[in-house]
Length: 95
Image (cartoon, rainbow, N blue to C red; front, side, top):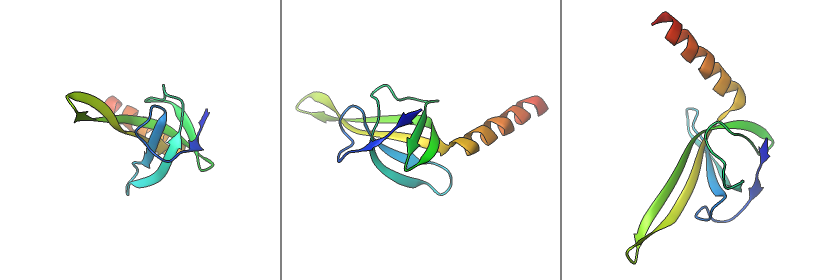
């Protein structure tokens, strides 16, 4: 399980804006996590456990080169993630 530490900007490697995507979406702030954090990883933010469901890396063109502009992790609470997996498996069985 990965635990976050707080940072100021989200354009450096390993610094992510964390957003809970359950309706309604909610920003959990900017946190420092390992650089290789990706889909399926479990992380802890603000004493809650989440599963990463999406990684968004945005780039901008500066002086003819692309530079990383923004890093965002889309997360779901661990319990919600497993409930969604269960519902997906039920849909596959019924189809």
